[in-house]
Image 1 (cartoon, rainbow, N blue to C red):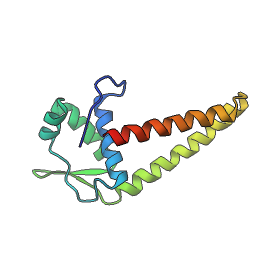
Image 2: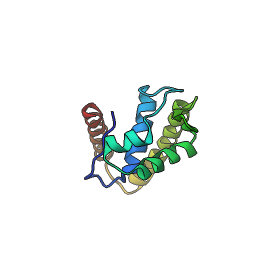
Image 3: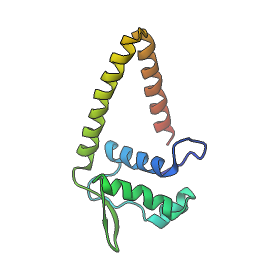
Length: 129
């Protein structure tokens, strides 16, 4: 279910966060679902439990998962809505960047091509997971 790209510049704990967020957004993980244990996830990914705990702690701070002592980590109610809303904020950032790129006289076709490439790469990566 999880995978780590050891050659990526993205820190491992962030890769774990990104995957869990993606699973929540896609409905692979639903509210109330239990996440794999810290130990099993660290073994599966060949990383230290500290790395997994760092990722889970960050997700807990974001209100996406919650820890139940002695039971594990569970997806929170409303996690998908929280993530969807946070992703919508990125659209505002794209708009700001578009204004900057237009002011720099970069052709819209070049900008759109970069966006298309990013989407295609992301879709290809998700199919391979």
